[in-house]
Amino acid sequence: MHAVPDVDYPLDGPGCVQETAPPLSPAMMLDPSQGSKSSSTEDSGVDIPPVKGIPRFFFPSKHALSDERRQELRTQVKQLFISSDTGDERCLALSDLVCVSAAIGLPRYLTLALFRRAREATPVRIGDDTGASPHQSVRWIEVDRVLSAIDAYTTADITQVGFNLLKGQEQTVLLPADLEVVARDVIENHPAFEFLATSPNFQDRYIDTVVARIFYIKPRGMNGQMTLAEFRLMNIIEILNKVNLAKTSVSPLMPSLFSYKDFYVVYCKFWELDRDRDMLLAQEDLESYGCDALSPKVIERILDGYAMPQLALHTGKMTYKEFIPFIMSVEDKTTNAALEYWFRCLDLDGDGVLSLLELETFWNFQSPRLNDRFKTDDFFSVIIDLVKPQSRYQIHLRDLKRNRPAARLFLDLLIDTQKHLENLRRLVDLGFRIYDRVYMDDEDDDTTARSLQALGDPDSKGRVPLEGWEKYATRTYRELASIEIDSQRRRQQLMLRRDQRCVDIDVIAIDSIAVEVSRSAVVTGAGFASNDSQLSNRSRQRSASKGNGSLAGGNGAGGNRARKNGRRRGF
Image 1 (tube, rainbow, N blue to C red):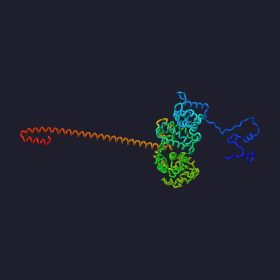
Image 2 (image 1 turned 90 degrees about the vertical axis):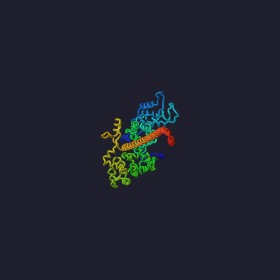
Image 3 (image 1 turned 90 degrees about the horizontal axis):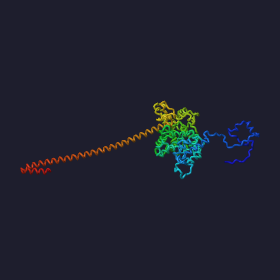
Image 4 (image 1 turned 135 degrees about the horizontal axis):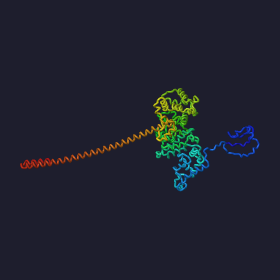
């Protein structure tokens, strides 16, 4: 800053410096003749005191609350901190603070943000009279200070109140870190996400996915910041109210930004590509996406950081946060964010124009990958006839946004082989067109079904067709779910077979033991029977020998020979 010299300029002449009236001020609206009269020395007879500091344009807020309403709202919030039993002031935990959010009109899943703001603005307390833990509860004075700071008592514009609650005290815009508290409130407190309570790693990935998608689809470019106007255009407050109405995490009534279905698809695709499990994707990993669908040249541009400059680490690899806008831009090339994403990749010199030389550079990489061998001149003719740019030999971003279906066909032909082949097949194959259609899931509740029909135009059968990212996410989730169900079924069958095999082995063992027992019993019984027969035979022989002996004894020598033979035979 340079000091302005104290110079006396003349009132008239070439060096005269005169203060001009601001545009659209009452002084500019005066007639020249009236201006000359007002500058005369005649006194009007009315003393008008000079007024300073009034803005040129002042419009009172349409949502301003009256003084009575402000006091009533403040008293209503204060009553929530009064104990119904003792009448004393009490502290409210996070779960009890939901009633405060409802009283001022905030969505349920901004309660955690209110709780944290109240805790951050409060010095550390040793304890309180109610016995509640100071780290898990807040007092009335703390919440009242926050509500006054975010204009909750002065305006009925809940969008502005929610924006003021999420942004930092010294900030004028929202940053990605400011919206993490909203996603964490949903993942930790929504009943539909209870199954992720024991998986903190998946909770963190879910939060990253939600925040990245919010900043990806915001209206005015991917600059990493969100203004109040963008926050209002995206209807964040209305989206959070719909989250509270959804019964399941994959319900069609769950907004796409917070749907577990979308998160599951993105994370599974990243996990399939990340072969070394370092949460980074190299060029060879991205080249395998979609069965080698993308051109190597455009993948190189993405990894160099031209697609998402604010997220790129310039390390030659892609992080999970960078993968989220990547997969959404690949699968739906008709959105503003996707068109801007691919335009930055194709614009090699960064002048905001796609020249024929730049298109030829990418076509040289893509042409060998296609079955249709277009010559370069034929390719230029196809592109010009398809996009119809205002300048014949230059394509601007506005040309692509003006004709989005043609822009999608143009990008598929130039950088995405698989999508281009699907476009060709969709033109000639009726069966593929029928197969390619995806409809929204049916709901049992009639009220829910009517709400689903309000989300899109149903066909003759009352089904709501899906397009773009919703179509891809729904189809992929169904495929992944069917694969998971089949794998679980196979595991159950293997376990049943293993159990049956163990049972068969036990039965065989029992049968073998029974056979051995019966065999030993038979052997033992046979031994007893042989011994009995031998004893009976011996007794018969002894009786016979005695008879012969008596008879021979009378003869003398004959009886002696019989006795000798009996001794030899063991009797």
